[in-house]
Length: 118
Image 1 (cartoon, rainbow, N blue to C red):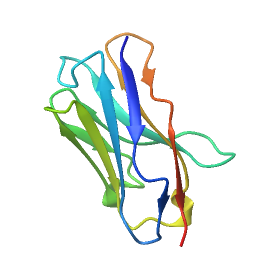
Image 2 (image 1 turned 90 degrees about the vertical axis):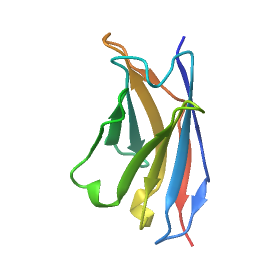
Image 3 (image 1 turned 60 degrees about the vertical axis):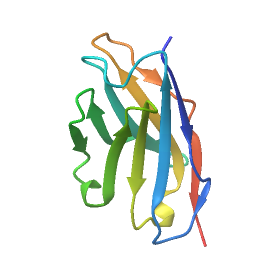
Image 4 (image 1 turned 135 degrees about the vertical axis):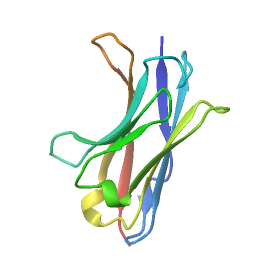
């Protein structure tokens, strides 16, 4: 019964920083062997993995976005945060957080729409 809820601004101006928060319920983000990821989907395009974090706090990022992507956590609030700097209209899309244990089926949030526009 793991549930994930994304939150953050729906509109961000170009060149600014996008910050999204994923609140996890039903499991601790520090539970052994769980991992947590951010994925996005531009309009009419496929899914793109941005990065992730293990239960121990180790991060990994997509090579194409590593320079401007940062994933952090707040264990007291059971939250995973995504920061994407220097955004452009190409960053517009639906952003999802997802989690996985050692089983085959991941957990997904419902997604949150982000539009980059002045």
